Image (tube, rainbow, N blue to C red):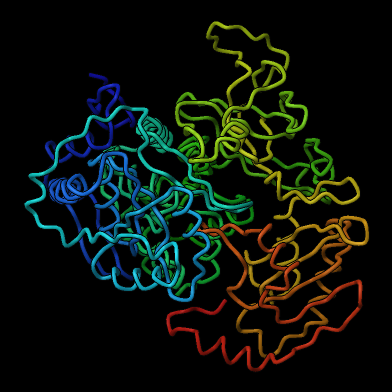
Length: 634
């Protein structure tokens, strides 16, 4: 037996070296049968809950059904509305030895391209869903020649007797557990091959970093088909043995305060999301709406999945500190699907680590600390230190030579959480998961010698996983600065798109926050800056486009010394994003080039043409007809 201690207050969980989540659930059902494992909120009303005993019983029913219909190792699409049915189906796949492929819930009038690419890449023949959604999902897929071939299995209609057909499969730690398709922020989604060992190792990393115990309490609104919602929201509570309240991301987006009211109601110790979630909670709240909140037990307010802004942390603390929230609860972290989930994290109940750096030097790839009050100083937030024996080094992405401490380069990672590669994409797997440095090194000693023997202070040449992210290390703290493929390079200067986007959205009150894309295009034989930006719905009827264009151009020139070539103002809610809410800059660029954006007004330096409102009234009428009564205006 192997005793894995994952929290300071929890008893050790007895596990074998090759234990899986099937072993964990069976253990929980035996030792804590009557304890609530999962609760689901629809809006703010509980619609269901499961104890560990009920969970294990229903999972066995579905797993027995799957084993009776599918060979071991079969890949199945999971298409569910947010709820407990997804949890049961995913765990049943682990119990049955079939490979789950979580996917977003198909919706009417939604493009099928992402779902098609997943089904085609993984050669999926079967899809699991619940009875209340089966008809709609099947109708959605029947309109597509490829998706119409899927065979649908309804998991909540399985007879209880199927539990007798279940047999615990012979699973090895290195066997494929599920395929986690990437969000596709810089390209087509790729199926990350996550093993049972990967899940176990990363779950232990999260439990250690977050200080989880069986006395913790979770509240999670993140989509379960995304790595943060699945590994952090569904599997982590089961691993550490604490209850979690799950919510629909749609319910959160409609009324962000539902999230914090759930944190207050269930006295959650762990909850979080990307930076935009904290922004929404601030912007869409008021003293009247915040009345009665109690956030005093919130110990880990994790934030990751997109750039973490120091300004957001400050605003959230300022607004919610009177309701018991503490600045030291903020827990910045960093990870990705290719590493199962988490790579680095902060120290629990310690304020986030900030560094003030010279923005001009950063654009040249240099790190230069700067007083916070100095002009053109940028504040960056640390994503913490490596967790559970993983390794992080910073490497020059072109020379592959490891960088010295404080140098900006690509983030490379090694460790037992690193997935096996991309499904059916051998070249991409070699390029991204089997990277080797030009010299052996660790993060602080670039010229450290390479030896065949395992050592503590020096890392081998590889293999490492290339993240595609830029960042730097200072005193073992990781700071992420942006994506390599999104980097804007104009006249030899590096510009991070998220910085330009922040400048644009703050330049005029009619512009929607977290809803813009900045990218460069080769025009007139040189790289030119293009801005795509959503307009707030409430400003569509009286939009002073000339003033907006002037403000954007002036702000970008003032803060970044850049000249804007073109601006496209687009309809509310039409910016292209990934399933996890990240801006798809490359897709926005392609849509701009193909004239596929929902443009309200545009401007170009090339033609100096005036912005027009061609058929704007009919567009506005169409938009307002689609607005539901629950949708809040920004």
